[in-house]
Length: 116
Length: 116
DNA sequence: CTGTTCGCTCACCTCAGGGTAACCACCCAC
DNA sequence: GTGGGTGGTTACCCTGAGGTGAGCGAACAG
Image 1 (tube, helix red, strand yellow):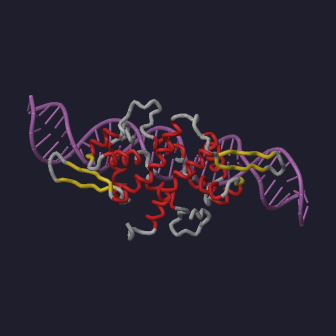
Image 2 (cartoon, chains in turn brown, green, purple, yellow; image 1 turned 90 degrees about the horizontal axis):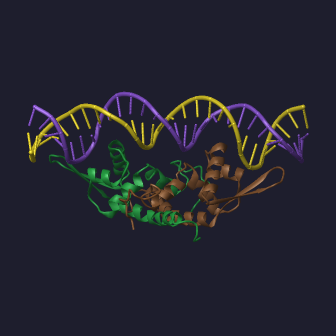
Image 3 (cartoon, chains in turn blue, red, yellow, orange; image 1 turned 60 degrees about the vertical axis):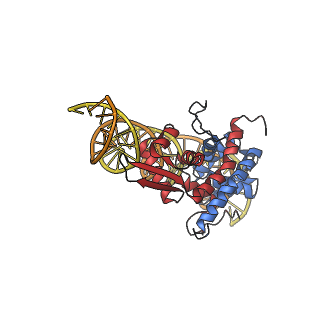
């Protein structure tokens, strides 16, 4: 594994990690993922409130990209006022689990370098 | 853990994961990390050859940022022609390990969605 | 005397990802 | 009738990460 020096890879990717980085590359995507991990079936406005600072346009576009990437499910109930719920797919759940060691690393580092 | 809805966090971060994302956010950083993981003590030109497509300017600035973040060590030997070697710090090594599940996820997904 | 290696630095430019703001259709409460 | 809440879309703007190309300073090969 970890065969970095592989320019001949058909998709231009060099190892699994940049495939993953492409999926979570959006500025707010990991936070959306996290919010959906804490509780599935979040609504749009709920996510907007949970991810402080994100705009509606960006939240909508990120959700669409994540849906296209197969990591979130979008369910639209034909009611009024409109109701839409977002949830993680199995792939999204696994992605989130794969993100946990990274979160732990980041958490450690925020507590200061006093405990390596 | 995973207390996403915490706008009062002093550094503006919301959970460990965006701290980590900030560190590996550069376009090529995970690839550099991977190259240094395969073998420590890589030289500048070696890294440039290992990470296909990166320019010298960007490689230099990424390395400096990673050095400032405490995940790579830079050792400059005062010779001529100049020789500089880069290696992972302990923190960088742990970061790389934390990245492995993510790489596995990306690897899986590239092989097609035939095995969920 | 020219070219190459090495590890950068500097000035400049491009472009896409994200920010801003307005608007839509629909219904309810006031 | 007007204000609020639902989940968006559209148009435009703007910043900063990244790309381009040149040069540098010493030594050594040819």
